[in-house]
Length: 350
Image 1 (cartoon, rainbow, N blue to C red):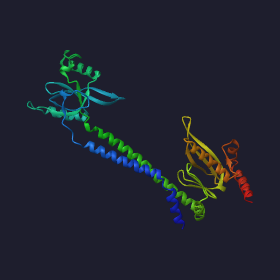
Image 2: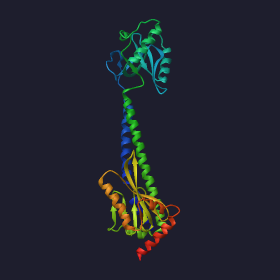
Image 3: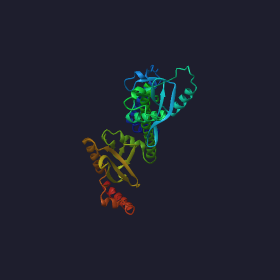
């Protein structure tokens, strides 16, 4: 019978529906986004438009290379190179390529192996507008190569195409965004799943410890009593002899074991965002129960009602973090405080 009662408690308090629902939602979103990302990433690329026909950015283009220079310009952030630019030609136009180091090494090898009758090596990428800074470096580099000032801003478009080829990009790059957000959603889903598992384990341990020291069958009868007082916002149930809280793991405390209670406010940048009730029991252990957010009048009202109900159920309790209560609960005085409370409680029973 005890094992059945444990299962009933575990089923009721050990499975956070919100965590389970969020786990399913985020994992479903992750699968959906990852599927879209994979589909986009593997779709067939269109034929690139000739670079000298391009009139705008973000077009998928192609160009033929018969010769190219080393890197003549790069863009770095905090010492980390983001982009490297190279000049190349198809025999008629000079154009600029944005290549990765790996792409450059592969192209350099292929260019060196070209023969006189070759039409060149095709390079694909996305068109991007040549910035003023990049244009200035290209002009200076070109003039240095020919050791005379052949090129300037006014005749730049005569020698160069107005757009460069970013060979590190393709129209399928949007798939990476879906893959990234899919992975992120999957990670969030795993966190909620982990929270679900941790709550389940902690609740199971809590039930086991409670059953070792208390009559579980008697508690189950109390828990099913329709006259129990329940506060949904603070996740607290008041039975005849116990306060039951399921904010995180299941916490069950006998009223007669409570010595001191006081509210704790949590603040961020000076603004209160949550509150919990600290409960100190006669075994000198502290428990945090009944957490609520500070948003909404109903939340705050139920929190205050929960706090007052504990006082009503245990009239001798020390309530509030007053200087007098703090002194009574310090290491020097706590044993005497508990002894005095036991005496008061016995007198109340009589």
